[in-house]
Image (tube, rainbow, N blue to C red; front, side, top):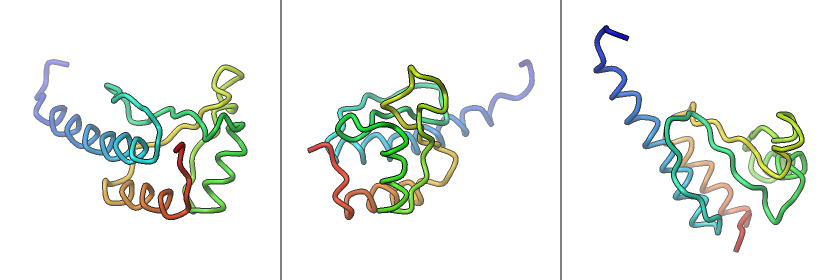
Amino acid sequence: MSGPQDNIQKMNEIYTGRRNVVINGLNELGWNLKPTKATFYLWIPTLNKMKSLDFADLLLEKTGIIVTPGIGYGEYREGYVRIALTVEEKRLEEAMGKMKKAGISQK
């Protein structure tokens, strides 16, 4: 806690950029998400209130995108999936493009 802090700022910038790619990409597809703070994953509501496992399966089958179904975290996370921000922005942009191409949209 008392050591150098410069790397913290760098990591915050990296994860902020990744978060923005996903939030902006999903909002372009009809979600209405607000940016989160201080996290390396996002919880997003499923498409048209699908069960989380069904939505995760749809994403995998149609796009090759892997997300974690919310039900795995308990009944109160049903209806959501968790998206990790642990990959580079380029891969997240690719994922958003795959969703768009597959017609996965809240519109």
